[in-house]
Amino acid sequence: MSYPQRIVCLTEETTETLYLLGEGNRVVGVSGYTVRPPEARKKPRISAYLHARFDKIEALEPDLILAFSDLQADIVNELIRRGYTVVTFNQRSIAEILEMIRMLGGLIGCTSKAETLATSLETGLDNVRMTAKQFSKRPRVFFEEWDDPLISGIEWVEELVEVAGGDPIFPELRHSKLGKDRIVSPDEVVRRQPDIIVGSWCGKSLQKKKIESRQDWQQVPAVRNGQIHEIKSAYILQPGPAALTEGVRQLHEIFTKATQ
Image (cartoon, rainbow, N blue to C red; front, side, top):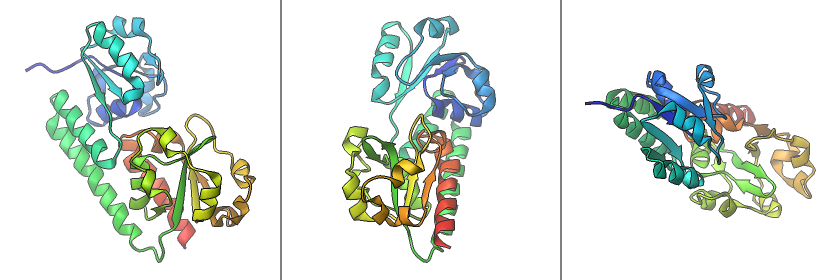
């Protein structure tokens, strides 16, 4: 049976997964935002998140194109009209990230390797979860996905906060897939009194002084005690292996130091 040999990835997490499966040689085109693994950055860059270079994609003659989420629907529609096979994942939770890995393995004929990878990631999360049980107190955590408007963490991020030993202060919003549905008021953050603020502003660096200067935020324990931290978006806001390894590791390290 023949499986796809020339794969274009429109987002980073499928590229990372293919390399972890030992199949990076099949990747012929990547997103311009790709950072992992470093060797993938040498591949032709054919897209941003919301835009793609169709001429570059066609020149690569892909037999499979991988996309992510409703935000890439317009790109996907155009590629389908041009006759390409496109698979679009829409993972938003830890379970769905693991499912994506297993599905991708099946698509390329690497079911066993994908199962091994997914199981390894699950084991790693279990180990972090067990270590976090040693905390004398679980900190209340506000994960700030964007600063203006203020957006709380998406589902897999809030789940990782829990795995790492924290309690999200907006658990009721985690299932909202769209950022606009996770907008929160600064006053409500103050009212919910987070012990730790973790920010990851996609595409720009966190500005601690901006957070500290918000009206009434000196009343927030996280601000008062200097517990404002940044995790780069590449490690936490891409729903793939990096979030389940490096992202959760950084969260756990932050929480460990804060609870000592």
